[in-house]
Image (tube, rainbow, N blue to C red; front, side):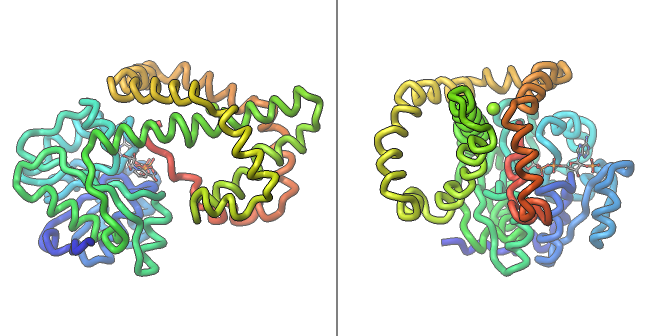
Length: 340
Ligand code: NDP
Ligand code: MG
């Protein structure tokens, strides 16, 4: 049960720093919930104008932070340490709250927040576009909420009020902590969502093509049709997927699936999780980012040069329904744009 209201933030000024996927949705929803919102943006970046066109008050990040009782920190995770040092730490009022939508920097010590402020988290379980569109329909996207530091005794109340203001409390609030939110989020994207799924698809494609089958047909089987299955998972879990596929597909699933993804895979998932938990992934990634992303660029180039990309582009160009409005049709293109 969630009885959260915006009441604890009724007289508060909220600075939303960053006006991207999450920032725009949060700022507009909070504003329409009757709260006092100022957007913090760079004068030379595209967000400044966009927020103004949306009818919001805009200021440079340092200025926005100065008057704020709550600062929602919604720039990309990897730029947050620099923005914190430059614009937030010298300007945030004692007793104000610093609110994150992902715990990476605080949990891994890349940002060490001042002791006299609250540090809390409201993480919607969906992309900004959905946070916005659900709010406009009178509904909301469920949110994780957490408190890292409670200097005022109000950290949790203010997180709940913020979650109410963006609409999340209309759906569900799940209490967590920065450690759980950060580690599970990284594990999901590494082992299953981005890393696991892309490897499964490309290895499946290579298997078929190396066996002499046409790449076009391989693409349909292992990448294109994945969406049908994932949509069934999303709507109704394993039960709905099993209900909608043939008996032959089910029997193949039960008997062959566990041979492809087996206990050895699970043991390696546990290794990946350990590297997240012991901080070695965060250290590796932070060093890579600081070095100017040399390996990241190489890995990305290799992914984009994979033969599945070439045949995929040709086939997608012939599927008219993927051309028009393709962003709105998928709706998830930005949902995992986080620490990675
Ligand atoms: P975006 O990549 O969409 O953020 C872009 C915004 O950040 C733009 O307004 C950009 O301004 C601004 N920005 C970038 N660099 C700077 C800088 N150096 N100084 C000031 N502003 C800057 O971020 P997301 O919304 O994806 O992520 C924000 C937070 O939300 C992250 O912590 C993320 O992990 C978390 N999160 C994201 C989800 C998502 O769906 N994307 C889901 C749940 C949590 P400009 O226009 O000037 O370039
Ligand atoms: Mg990959």
